[in-house]
Length: 264
Image (cartoon, rainbow, N blue to C red):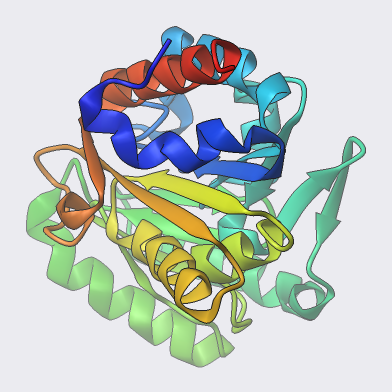
């Protein structure tokens, strides 16, 4: 079954699927955005589509700001690689493997989370295991300035990074140079073609990494896929393919699996 015209840039993954990688974000891509991060769940259709595609390609990975164990629990698809906290951790043979550069910062993350809980009552302070903590103000947008000020102060006090992650949230994390771009670069090493699907500013480094690898010749082909929402940055919507929300991404995954299965 050929690819629909809107998905034509995926043709290189169909031509050589065993040397192709498909990587994707979780929140806003596999799962609809919700007010309570703990309640986020991937669409059943998206999980089913991943299960259909996983045996057909060389690599499938979910690369997310979520903890790796969360991804493992909610995307329990055999063959899918779970990379959490923007690359600080991943699941390998059922075990959580942490970037060793981050380990010394675990006490600082815990102390910072306690301070944020005390200073920002009424806002959600999400502890992402022991390696990151995110403050959310989606349900109280008027408190954005307060949240940003407090988070920056706590981060400076403990020597932590505090990047804005979009979607009305700010994260404290170890000062280790990882993001979705570095995670994707490591994952696609040796591949012929790779695609990444994401919906937010935190996904743009993955797009940029694929573009750079293509220019340098490390990848023969790359595909960027933007997942549309009312909050998606303009740069995400400039991807080679744009789909409408998690439903649209699930359809793309299904179409790609069908095209690979029917080739030849």
